[in-house]
Length: 555
Image (cartoon, helix red, strand yellow):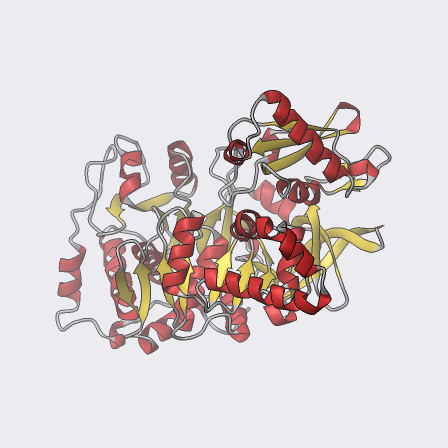
């Protein structure tokens, strides 16, 4: 058990950092101080108390990311209830299913989600409240029991002389208690609610503090969903604990919107997924690298270093000019992009995590990062092992398994899935295949369930092939599958705007482009992994909340 109590960590920091800015809603420019966070949490406590919410009850939080969302999260957890954040992009049916499955008794909903509850029967729910205002939303659901609560009035009555640091007094909540249920899927039949304890979160936070990922006074731009474990930990919980100031983007992070916000916020640390860097590389940097003059310069040792410096400065300037480290998580970074960033000495590092570890499994600061890895085993809070390993290309590859302070309790109301998650001797199965070097660097090869077998039993890791395909001209995304006779086929989505710009029109020309791409690709693949055909998917792939393709739909 981690010695630092999770709730006490925040009780102390809210007092110590009272005047500092904590969260800003970037779109509207509204800033909340740490004092405001403490007061919002106190108002949430009063709402829960008046609504009859008991310790250990579940409270759902559904709405787009904003400062108020973060403050309500903190209020629910420091009251002693269990917060159930639901990703705002889930369909209505999935949201209602998760509210029911989690045994939620109270809901905080954003304006865009109020309509989801109109006329619905939510038998356990005692009330629905607005995220931005804390106002009760009476009359939305059938058999509505939402109390007529004025949080501001209750607050003034409870604290007639004003709310001060001395009023921040949270109940005793042990680190062994579940404080968060994070769902990995919304769909009925696939829902797995990860039961995360205060200890799991404390392990991640205390480790991150030793790494000094964020510092007092830093600015941070949050553009990933906070209902997901990765962003919740490092775009919300850690900056609040560190005294950093979080600007919450609150809108879709298109390259134009994102680059403008980064220049204004000027963050020192950027928490991202690979797609952001890969899009910038493919649309901005890759075309420049094809320029004849640039190619000539890169082939000339005397000037190569100077060219790399210019690329590095241009990229750092694009990210606000103040960036010291970019942490990539959620998926592997494309090897071509990673190699280029490494050559220009851009401060990027890749971590590995999963909701079940709240979320960190491996990480290394940029200065200690080994290119191609996904960080190092975090000895401070966990142990890793490679199970059922077999030698592949000189490496002992098997399933990465975890035991430690970061490992969740299992899945809510799903004993079968919980039993499957853990080995007989108590290690957590990640489902990821990889190997660990002597320096504790972790290398992933792919998901065990995604691995394909070649015609003679060779292991094929489709994610590695898909990453190469996605970097080909005019291809957006790809999924590798096997057809009859072990034929490897790539399902791809096409960048039609780029095709039109290049003057490539008509089915025959598109087929010719795809065939040329396939030929180039296969030159860099082992014979058993080569692609026999590209199949075009019209529209987009259906994806999970963290934007991974739902592979099972296309096999």
